[in-house]
Every structure is written in structure tokens, then in C-alpha cells.
Amino acid sequence: MDDSVKSGHLWVSWEAYHQAIEILAKQVHASGWQFDQVLCLARGGLRPGDVFSRLFKVPLAVLSTSSYREAAGTLRGSLDISAHISSTAGPLKGNILLVDDLVDSGVTLQKVQDHLAENFSLVTEVRSAVIWYKACSVCKPDYFLEYLPDSPWIHQPFERYDELTPDTLD
Image (cartoon, rainbow, N blue to C red; front, side):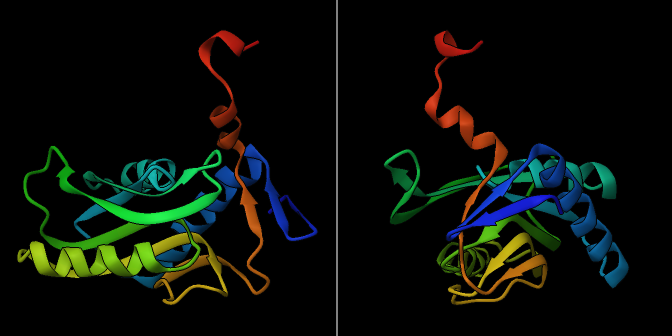
């Protein structure tokens, strides 16, 4: 990957970001595990989830979660999990690949997995896939591209839009 780590920060280009999603998809494919749907966590998991859904030819479901809201998304607050999952494939069922961009504290991944187990009885198995897995996480994803022992702050290429408005676009 073409990323740059400087003083506790990991800077990721668009090219490296897309390449990372594809390499993670190859890793999941190589495992041989078959899944019926991709469930992505919005917002960070939207792009990887879309790519996975297209590559694996399975329906995409979206679950909105939020914990980073303050200071342009840099301060963690309480975790909110949407009461509903958006999908055109009917109820969530079978084997589910839960996709997000990263596991930071691990709280979101852990609570979403608990939420699925408690509220979706048709789900057989859930496995998780993320690009980045930080050492500070309380849980380990099933598939990850890069383990980050120093838990840097990750600057993803789409975050530039957090500081912009339509009238400030070039």
C-alpha cells in the first residue's frame, strides 16, 4: 500500500485505499468462506461494502452507526446503531460478511455483532472484514489487511469532504 505514517498518523491516498479494498477482497475469497450478503457499516464501510457486493455478486445491506461526531469526526462519543438495516434483498439471513474500513477501539464491531445475534434470528454466521485493525481494539476482525501496532490516526482520502461544503468546491 502507498500510505505514509508520520508521527502517529497514517495518510492514505485514493489509489492505496482502492488497492487495499481489492487486496482484502482477495484475502476473503482465498479463505473459501461463502457468504450470502455483505453488511457494511456506514459511513466508513460504504465504499468497501459496495466493492465487495459487486465483486462477490451478493446483495449489499447497510447499517448506519455513529460514534465519531465531534471535532470534524475526530472525537469519539457514545455509539448509536440504527434500528433498521437497509437492503433490497429482504431480511438479513444466512452467512453475513460484516464490512467496515477499520477497527479502532473495537466497540462498534463488538456491539454490532451482539446486535445482530440478538435481533436477527435468520443470520447463521457473521464474520468481519476491515482494512485496518488497530492494536488498541478490544476485538479482532476475522479478516484484515493491515495490523497497526501503534494505533495511528488514519486519514482516509474521502475525509477532505468533512471540511468542505458545495460552495467551496473548486
